[in-house]
Image (cartoon, rainbow, N blue to C red; front, side, top):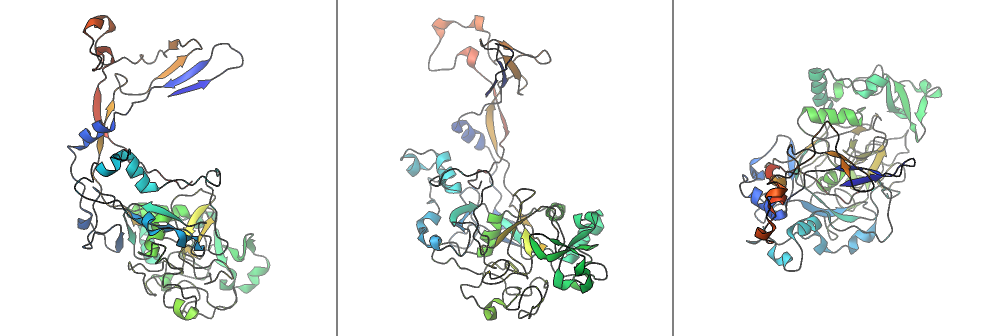
Length: 473
């Protein structure tokens, strides 16, 4: 790769050359993979308190990593009706048979195996509306979901059946002496109607974007509404007043990670992936409190934030597993608490799922649909945001061949002037080809079908980096 930089004070141009280790052709990669151990069978892997989300075969067994075993579904807001125009064929997976490893049928149409897999995994970019800035996300005004809905794909994963509870988070804090960011800052946001002392509202500072949330001194996960309150009778409630970092540190401690929002929504929709069976809520399409109260902890019909009639039995957070699960057996995928997602920007971290302060129709706060989405600053801690963790299935370590451009197989910084003359820093010797010297080469004996002796390069087998290509900008 060449990076050219022109200076204003000299006629000579200095160029920084980084000579990287160059990849070998795909055929060599397949040669390197020939000796690999088979992928672990995902059917042999299970974790307590977690559910597997991935592609199943006709017998209900998990599809292995030797095939495309991810999930395709329609991601985005539940209100946008354009999802109905997406064809079911767009969600279909490639045909699998004895020739699946070589993609013979696709190569006959002029596509390589890599091109086919790339299209299967991420689809095609729609540039019809012009380029968008990095991080662009168009959201629906009611539930905050992506507009318009689109087909996405996620790799298989395991996900916690319920949000992390106060009891579970307490074990982490006692074992690691971890101090949450709410403790470090000395305050956290509490809903105004939950304050033990209503007179404090007269002098309290509020969130400028959500005036019903009050900055309360010494409120954190152990004192959810501030001094004088306790989590002791709420040990099975979701832990709250945790920031994005607090959540990520817990997941790391238990050997897991935060979910990506596409993973989370795939789990929340629980098989309702296509235009014909995609639903507005986890229980279906019915938008009534009498049905919703069986599945989700939401605000209800009362006036927010002072009147909560507790139709579902709770005015604040509720114990996990208090409501009916979705088709995958996952609890609280709608309501109770928002859940932190990995990714996003520090000033705009993603939360999904809605909480006990949200409504069915979006008349106040967010509409608690399966597409419900919001963003918060990464350091935000509040009484209605928690999290759950996910874990990726085990996969084999894959290798591929690389060429050695240098004797030390490293990178070399090279200065080049406008005439193409190269100068190498004295601290490192210039790269040399692995082969014979130029003066030993006889042009008469040269076979054009084979590499020249002075152009032969050594190669070695190294661990293949696992990368994910995404069209989500």
